[in-house]
Structure formats: structure tokens, C-alpha cells
Image (tube, helix red, strand yellow):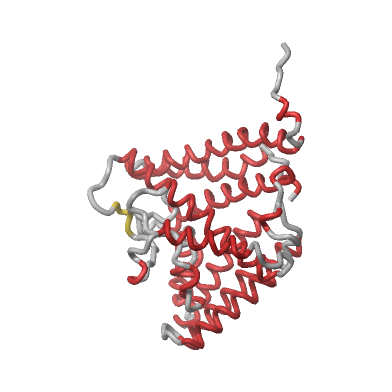
Length: 339
């Protein structure tokens, strides 16, 4: 049987054709642990604890087996696969271990168990439940997300007119690209009651405020339950002063994010770039703790200037190791798998 393809098919790079075969298979394999996770949450809700423990372990195992059974040769696509595995792992550990003493309670009238499980599965921030770790300043509760998206898209466009070889320009492009992609997904896929994912980046006035209120809080829950809380509340039991335990908890959360990003970005970055990404988070953690020790919650113009100076400097240093000399906008989709 002869299959004819339109002429445009012949112009598609072989790597993209290969991706077209590999990516659907990879997605299908990742749906298996997602289904296990859904039914684990469902039976946990029903009170079948042995069954939900078994399903949770199966979900965790199949998340890590999936990339082995369905490998992807395209680096950026493999990044997405790694992100899915890492996010699924953190969500599982957060829900079934980190929250064992603080189970989710639905805000308002509880939906049927099947819907409860679906919402808990699909909400990274558990915004429909309590407890959650969403912190929105009062002055940003009612701002327009679409308007802010437009402002940040415009800022990204302005950056394209600047010299693309400058690490600081690339650093802000990466920052804005993450904002634009995540906010677009948020506006498209979120539930109506979901609060904003980001605050306006240009309103950040401190490191602690940037990381806890301005930057996206998609992974605040696992950072709290898997890193911060065990150190913050566990270490004082062994005689560690609370102020030290609190600082180590903050560093633990930043360390978790360093590991997460290094693992996810490994397919497209070399060792130097991965080292810089990891250190970016670790040094930010140290700087955030130092800022809190010096300033506490006090607002001050000097605190704001120092925060912007530090963040711009460390982000520029990290971006200089990415080896993207001509900026993000010059990356051609046909050469995407060569990134």
C-alpha cells in the first residue's frame, strides 16, 4: 500500500518527523501514572488506604519507567517529559506524604468524590482547597491578568530591539518568556476561581516578596511540605534554634527547586549551564535568608534597589552560561531539536 504525503511533508526536518512519532507515544505512557494518581486520590477520599497506597506507589514507579519505555530523541521535547516526571513525582510525594497530617478540605460544598479527585489532580496549587500556600497581596487581588500579560508581552517585544548578545537582555527574555507561557496556560486552562499565577514582575520590591508573592507559586505546596516544613518544624525537636531551622527550611525549598530545574533541563544544557542554574536557586536562597535577617518584613527603597541589583546580576550570570548568543526569538522551529 503506497501512502502519499503532501509536498510540505518532504520539507520537514527528519528530527521533527521523528518527534512526531515519539511524542504521542511518550504522552500515552505518561497518562498511565496520571491515571494511577487519579484513582489513588479517589480511593484515598473513599477511605481505602491500602489501595490508595498501592496506587500511589504504582504511579510513582510508572512516572519514572515511562521515559525508559518511551524515550524521546528531541532535547526540548525530552525536557517536557522530564518536567512531567518531576512535577508528577513532587505532586505525589506532596499529596501522599507531605500532607499526611494536613489532608485537603474542599472550600465550600464538597463535590462528588470523582470530581474531588479530578480537581485535586489538576490543581498544582490546590486553590480550591485548604490548606494551600497561595499568598496574594491585598493590592493585587483584583488586577487584570490579561492586561498584565499584554504588558509583559510588550516588554518582551521591546527587548528584541536590544543587543541580543548581552546576558542581561537574555536573562530578562527568559524571565518574561516563562511569565508569558505560564500565564497563557493559566488563562486558558485554569478554573474560574483560580487566583493569578504571577504578580506584576515590575512591582517586586524584595527578594522574599519576589519569590513568595510575585513569581509563580505553582510549586509552593511541595516546597512547603517536602522541604520547608520538615526542616522548620523537625530540627527544633533536636535542639536547633527556631530561627536557624526556619532559615534552613527556606534553603531546603530553594534546593528542591534547584534539583527540579537541573533534572528537567538536563536534555538541552551542558554541565556548566546546569551548574549555573542550580547555583542560581541556591544563591537566591542564601540571599533571601540574608535579606530577611537584615530587613525582616520592613519595606525600604534601598532593600528594593539591592534586590533588583542582585537578581539582575545573578540572572545575567546564569543566562551567560546558556549559550544562546542571538536571543530567544532567533531560535528556528525547524532546528528546535538541535537546541
